[in-house]
Image 1 (cartoon, rainbow, N blue to C red):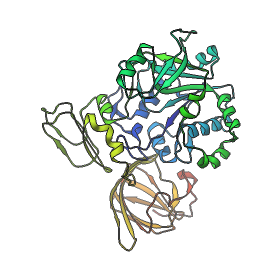
Image 2: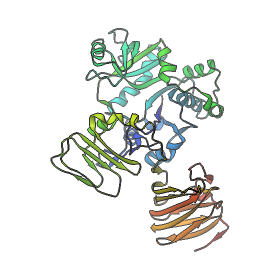
Image 3: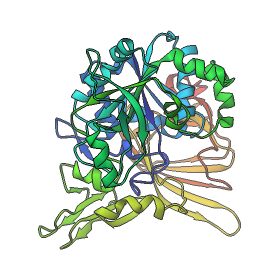
Image 4: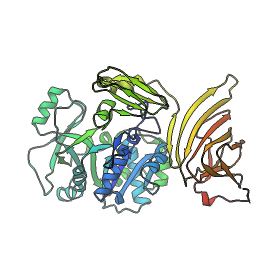
Length: 458
C-alpha cells in the first residue's frame, strides 16, 4: 500500500503565523517526545516512521510549499508537485498519474489518501494500515476511516453506515450516505445511528481512479496531466468521486483524533501557554501567547485570549471567536513576510514602493551550515548582501569569493549568484528594482557542486 499525504491550504485560519507558503501544518508550536518544538507535518512524518509507513509515503503539495516540506521532513522526501492550487480532486488525479507513469506503481496497488495534519495517537496509523485488508475483504471501491464521535460535533461531516453489521477481520461497515456539518440536535440523532466523523482518510485501488480519469478523457501521463492541470475543475474529491460512489465501506477508529485547524483547537494541544518573547501574568486564565517577533509582548489579567504575532501581522482574539479569522481576512492580501526554505529561512524586514514605481525590499536571511541557495539570476532587480555573522562562499558569474561578517556583496541585475554557508550565516538582503516578486528567478542548478567555476578568489 502507498500512502499520500495531501498538503495544501491557503494559510488563513492560523494567521498571522500561517500564510500562503507556510500553512498550519508547518507551524512549530507542538512538542515532540524529546521536548523539542515540532510542526504538525513533522509529527505525522515521525509517526509514520514509528509505524514503518514512511518509506511508502508521498506528499502532494503546491510549488510554494516544496522547500518548506524539504526543510522540515528532509530533502529525500517523495514530493508530487501541483502546478497550482485546484482543490482535492485535481490534486489526487495528478497524484494517480505520478504514481502510475513516474513511480511505476502497479494499477492493483492500494492507495491511501490522508490529510497532512491529523493530530492523532499512533494507533490511528495501525488503522490506516488495515485499509488494504479492508478493501481486499470487502471488494468495495472505496474504504474510508471514520472516527467514533466523542460528542455531537457541529464542525465535522458524518459517515452514516447502512446498518450495525460489522464485517471482515478488520470490522468494517457498509456506508449508506454522508451528512455535512449538522446542527447539534441532528448530530445527536446521527450518533444514535452509529454515524462516524469523516476524517478525510480513504483508500482505493490505483486502477479505480485511473478508470475514472480515462472515462473523463484525462491523461494517465504525469507530464500531460500537468499541462492540462489549469483546465481541471476546482472540486473536492468528496464531491466528484466519494459522494457519487455506491460501493463504499468504512473502518471505525475508536481513539483520539482532533482537527487542529483553528487557534482555539491548536492551543488546546500546546504544552505551553507561551511561545516566544513576552510575559503572560499569572492571573491570566486560558490565555495563550505565540510570538515570533523580536519584541516582547505583555498580556495582563485576561481570560480566554489568544495573541499571535509574526512578521505577517498581529492577532488578538477571544479563543471561541478565533475561527472567524478566515472571513475577516477575506479581502486581505499581502506577500508572505516569513518563509522557510530547504536552505534556511528569511523574514521581510521592510518593503517600500515609491511613486515613480521603484520598489525596495529588505530581508533578514539565515542560511544553515552546509546549505546553499540555488545558482540563479534576476532580470528586474539588483541585490546588496551585508553579511552579519558567519562565513560563506559566494559565486558571482562563475567566480568564487569567500566572505565573512562585515563584508558587503553587490549583485547587479542579470548576475548569476549563489551562496554556500560554511557556518550558519545571517545576512541582510536589500532588493531594488521595478518588480520584486519571487517569480523573477531564473535557476540554473540547485546543488553547489554543479556550478561551473572559471576562477577562484580568496
